[in-house]
Image (tube, rainbow over all chains, first blue to last red; front, side, top):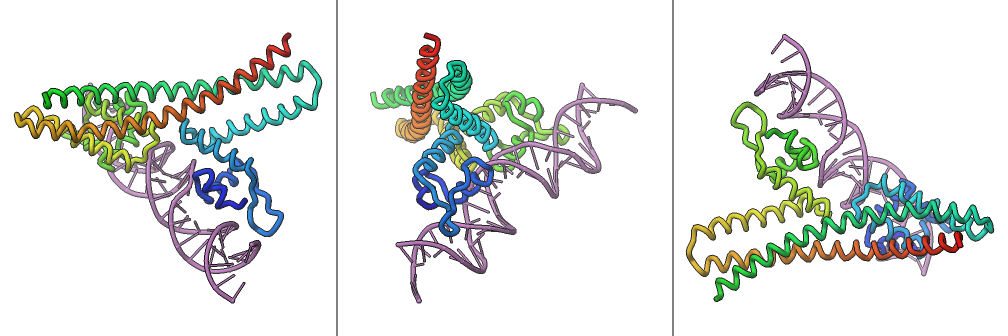
Length: 138
Length: 138
DNA sequence: TTGCTCCTCACGTCACGTGAGGTGGC
DNA sequence: TTGCTCCTCACGTCACGTGAGGTGGC
């Protein structure tokens, strides 16, 4: 796949992809044949994950970079998981991954709770308006 | 109150307040005595609402401006509500307010649902990790 | 060969951050 | 009078948008 198709599938633009590459967020797309970047479905998935976290959690690209680096480190560990047989090593991998997931969960829940509060307030407004409309009709 | 106190209460900065004033998002603070802007608790509430929508819904300041203008128009109508006795006028006010609240509700729910999906995925990850840890301990 | 997409500068924009230099009010 | 906060430019920054001019591949 080329950059335009990837951008469209991820709901973003080629410029954004090149910018993320420049920042080291996306890894340089292969350039074997010619000057064009080549991507696969894994790259699309990665880009989708990044833009999702960016939009839903409102993270800066600096924060995202750190988060993605931690994610990559864990992925590397998971590969070592299969290479090693060491019990202790496997435990270290799991123990390192858990707090990372916990942190993300807390961020997500905090935002969702704030949105739920906002929804409750809007619901209340709506109920008031509906009640008034009923009065005016009665 | 002066600009620094307002900024702190709203969790933002004086520069942001001045910028929003420049854009017409905040209305010019009174400047009766001297050159300093003066604010009251209503201004704090308004600023809090704006930054909340900005952060939670990820709106641009342009979108926020339109939303706030609609909100102000409705507030003006509500004042007219108390001045008029006309049934028809009151109904128009209610009918104008309802779709506005509906639109906001939909935006909020969409975001919350996306966050819930993200949370479910993270929960799943966590469960997997916990299961592996149990295995390693057993 | 003709279109279309891609490429790299490089300047523009949005939403502020950050001093520089000066003035107001307890 | 001394600090502290405020004031207005005005340039810097982050995360891209948007042409300008040129090249690659079906």
